Image 1 (spheres, rainbow over the protein chains, first blue to last red):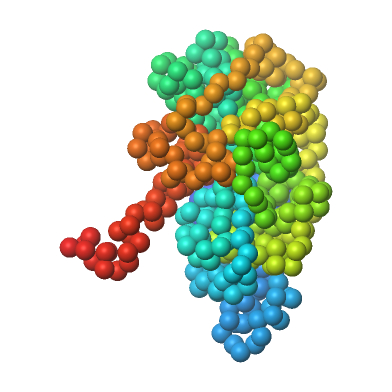
Image 2 (image 1 turned 60 degrees about the vertical axis):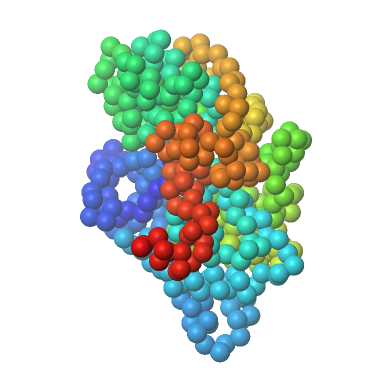
Length: 86
Length: 389
């Protein structure tokens, strides 16, 4: 029910509608709730409506934390250092 | 797919698992509730429970809207379709929720009712436009994620003067349910487990933001970490909860910062406030009547409110005596503790609501977890070899 997936906006249509690309599948959705969505933005689609935009910088920051954690496990660095970062 | 695959990396998940194992204190028990069915599904599907130390236990909460929908509400929808001749539209998951007299929406459809599965509330509105001679009712269920689209179609129906369209509103609210689990005398009477923290909903929080959880984290001194639905998100969220428990903190933290902000989606909140108001009380399957935990349609939209339009009267209906969905939704029992699990109750033929949606605790355990309980599987490579031969 509450599952939703990230999709890339490929075309803005009239009437607060947009075409999004979900891994190669294109679908028309409403962007009424995310009025500032632009082409190439990633939005979260739920029951045919975009409900939020993905912030690429924040996504990168989260992935960077995972990467740092992996590096910390493979290096002699004290793990407590990561504890403060995360 | 971007923003999915990179959050499913097995090696990184194992690194987080190692970190969790290193940081848990062996003399402490960590009972965390994942409120949202999306997390329940992820935990079962990706084997996250197997990656956690024995003293970290994940408890399934009541955050699947299909699972908490009481029989009496489905009965109202079935009666509208069977006795009042409306075209009833609803989301796919809702179609198989067991109702009274062995019925469900899909079985009522087999009896000739005009019931249609829609992907979106927008599709229900389009049906009403295509059938001006018929009454079209949208049976709307879901948490704050699904509510703004319902509000938008109600606004559009009013703007277009579309009088053959109405909504049977069963939208429920997340913070009220979490508070109820922790606070109410009723919940204590019917039994809930001791909890040390919550995994906060992902997509609900896109709409409402992280701030609504702050007062209850402070009042009940329970940590909340909002996390995404991908396996690494969930693992990271559990690590953040373990750290809060270890340092006796009870704060709202946001692992899902790529989409969730403190204030949420203000446009969505505005349309919800314009169209809906609080119900004094609403019955949840498994939790009973929960005060101010659901929404009803404002009087300004009464023409499009199916409850008013068809003068519907709600009647509570108890679950089947053998069904343990209620206790499972409160975290008191596990799916495998139910006598009906995997025998008369399966995803193909569900007896209880938790077996319906793939986000339900029973359906998730049936699909991904039930073989973990078998002795043969747990015996390791030798047993596997013997099965192969």
